[in-house]
Length: 456
Image (cartoon, rainbow, N blue to C red; front, side):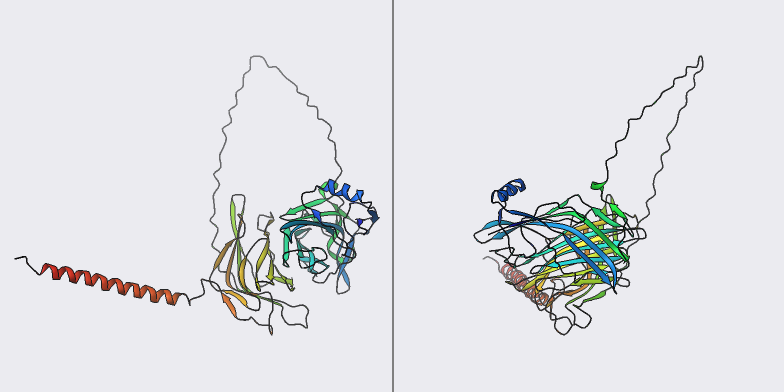
């Protein structure tokens, strides 16, 4: 059996090593999780493996026949998963040269690059833009353990999701972001490495020749030491003493006005314009977050919110973008339990301070219900997503899988909405109270009877 190293590049040179041939996604080698990268490299060389160049992953996304998003990059993955026999196995692979861009979206202030490959895997980058610059808000990597080609003998067939925040910021509009250096992201069992990156979001028809370089690629400038000349003047018989009294300004704190209850928005995802809905959501959303010592809250305004997302058998996504906040919900379903839940949430906020806030949790188990039904919770709920982020929901109803005729199915109500449990509690409390009254009356009656008799 022959394995291949693939060296992918963005521009013209070959860099980086790959441990599988992802153009076919059929040749993989499981690696012990405890081996270091250097040991793995020497191990493969000892087997006399073949080294060959590759051209990386290059995609162009068009909107009405005009180029609106371009990418040429290398992404390598290292994933550790649980295999049969209670073992942890590690597999390494790269984003293949041939990918699908279905689900990619171009808009004036927000864009999404979604690259799908293999059997249920996808790599998604979300971008946002202000007047002069744009940035990547998040990278979401979904991988299906049901793909035995990549994950042989996996004990689970779930679709896993990992979300990270890349360092692609302050990219000038009408310029390409270029970064030949490697950038690594490690989250739980997944390691992602970006290299030889050339990306331009919000393209206006043709790719720009101007580049915005990442910090790692900037040339190192050596600053010459500065020599200070000190001149001393001696004045005879003159003494001047100046005393400066510092002035302390006490800042005034203006209380933040309470936000109104957020309006309920109705959001629908369709595979295409001629299809029925594959994901439904109706909810009012608010976030509370802390930046330093300051706590802030932002409501999502349904008017002006851009809706996007994808639907899958085991994983679905809903992305809501406004001028001030972006939500990315990732839902997964379990074939064994036949239930779905909210698995991951990424929130990016742009408060008035101008400092972008981003938080992610990839290990949630919220809003669980049976596949084919919807999850409903009309009462206000708050969830501590991270230590810095709180999510508030109002009049929530969501169904990310198995929608019939484009409407919500029978709802699984949250405990606060479910009044059926209150009836037995009320009846039980009433009976307990009645029994207590009877016992007290009996005791009092016995005492009166006893006092009425006198001893002879």
